Length: 349
Image (cartoon, rainbow, N blue to C red; front, side):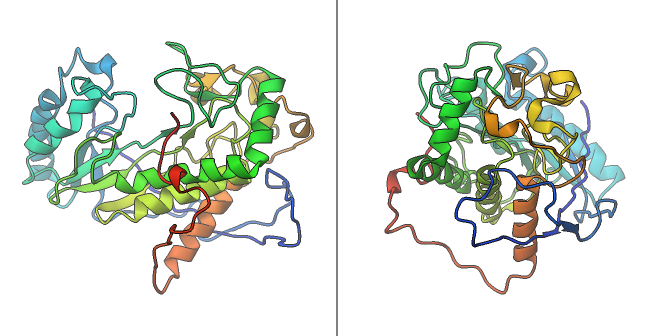
């Protein structure tokens, strides 16, 4: 069993929004003035520190090692006891499943949480880790309303990346620029607010005796143009805010800090939208990068990025973090008169 350690970095940013621009550029200009408080080298810790007994063991490729969630948690309990004996002040977190693809009651990912939650030894296990990725395509195949013209995912094909067609990328730009597209997209993150109560990705309610830490989260987009746009920043801010609204959630960690190709809070190269490193995505993204190319939309061609500068996602999450740190009170939003109530908290079908 591997023991998985994570460090948590909170990205604080100050930024200025020019409200007079009715049509702001889709990506943050490289000249935007950003200040990090505290600087990235500062260590920010969770107390007491968590030890994670790895991640995503609910996928079928691990079935040869652990037949199901029960086999995993029984071994994890043994490790948790041993760890707590030596380090009594740490928190031990075990693996919880988040998967909309495992929808049949007999699926490994469907049954995982029920088995883990029921048999976790709460004398030594403090909580669970979760990777709530939101897929904009339809995991069951067929056309997806939030990925216009993108063919259904095939077996072995990556869940995210830039689709290798300028026409399809442009179709998705036009969709995201429309009022309907924005409405439908920004309703999706509200689904995450039910992660601990048992939705059709977690399937079981988290016991009140266990805590939850989100060690990875982002959006899986197979078209491309959403990536690192201001709309992506708003999407991830809504995702983080909804996760943090869950009383049992202690922290949310974005996947990933450094990767401008489509994920990160910070840019990685001077040409992130073109597909860095000779036109191919960085090695950390290669395994899940559809098409293995960059942005083919005309408006991307002259975008120059700067390594370690915040992306739109980084700016938005930094602003959210700073706002939450200085908030006096919170009040839930009412969607009683929303123009599109059917989209709130729903995933593509």
